[in-house]
Amino acid sequence: MSSFFSALIIVGVLGSLLAFFLILQMNNRTNNKPGQTTGHNYDGIEEYDNPLPAWWYWGFIATIIFGLGYLAYYPGLGNFSGLSNWTQINQLEVEQAVADERYGPIFAQYRDIPIDTLTSNPAAMKMGHRLFINNCAVCHGAAATGSLGFPNLTDEEWLWGGDGTTIETTLRHGRNAMMPAWSSVLSNQDIKEVTEYVLSLSGREVGAALASSGQAHFMTYCTMCHGPEGKGQAMFGAPNLTNDIWLYGNSRARIEQVIKHGGNGAMPSFESRLGSDKVHILAAYVKSLGES
Image (cartoon, rainbow, N blue to C red; front, top):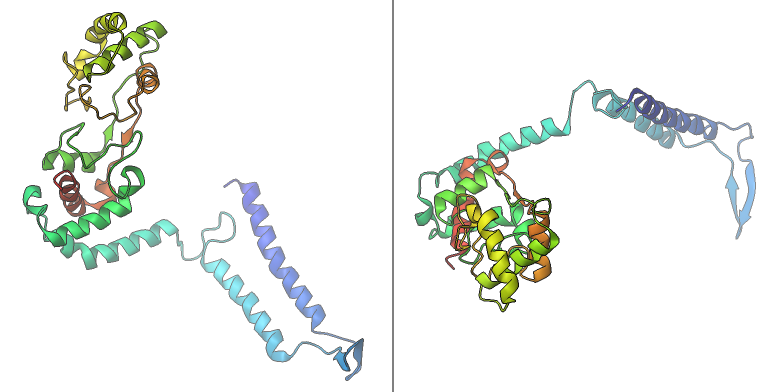
């Protein structure tokens, strides 16, 4: 935060407390004689013009003093960090450390159990389900069926491999899409031709002439990742183009868009967020989704 805005906040906060105090003082004094009214009369009830009751006045004073103490101890005055040096990050780290100490052994008991064995453990899978809902459902959906740009985890298609070790590696370190944009290499006509050929790989009805021309481009630019038969390669995360599973949609327009602009999907790493024991359980749960 800049020094200007820091000073502005400090002046605003302390000025507000001072204004509250002055208003309180003005309402605590009166030059009227005891029993004098304000002149307000409603339904036979007259309003006296008396000072604030002492308990009320000192209650307000106590809140102002508390506010000043709070602002001195915690950060609330611009760039002033407070006497306690408290931050929300430090508080989170403390709470995480307490949680790890309390709940860590519960997750650690499954650390050495192979993922293929862990998938049949009801208690572990219940934990894995909660981990999935809290960390993965925002992209893959609560039912793990994915959406446009986010893989379905319940089918047989795995971009990087569906064995337990590979799934755990994906969760630990994350993945980044490697589909480049070809608009600078291929013309719009070339892209239409490649699209037609790609559609033909999955048995779709296509224009034979366009698909034939597209095959030449495919063999030149696409086989390194997708293979000469278009069946993909897990080592590159390149999808199989011969089935009916499409991450970004299977319409001509969608396929053309991906070829032209590439794919920029990113799977985040959960190693630092969850820790190795939770990732191990979560990997087992994800693997179980494709087995159910």
